[in-house]
Image (cartoon, rainbow, N blue to C red; front, side, top):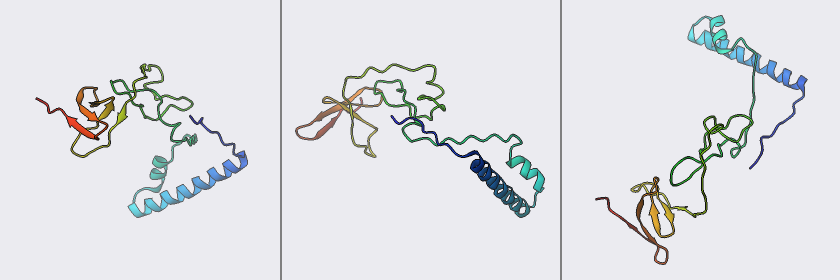
Length: 148
């Protein structure tokens, strides 16, 4: 897993960039106010918060997904955005379900006429782990069990 990266920016450069972005933003809001024919000062107040606190977080795709497993028979990653400085999302930061691994499960290729299916040995499973049919590796044939 790739850790969160920090990039150091010179304070003077950052303040200059911030002031430039703020000036251009205010100019854009004033143009919008004249186009929409609304009060310019009120629109600036609503668009720009009075508190001058900005946080910039640039995260890698792998580092921004929760590493906890979703509960269920077929385990999969949670994939919700993580809390800054953590490997887990807000719900899994405190409570993490355990996942027992050891049984290899492969996902079958998606088809528009079938729900997502997984292969465990010769058994074909659905999302809840119920057996939906069998797979014959030597002939590459899928036999589905019709629901009663």
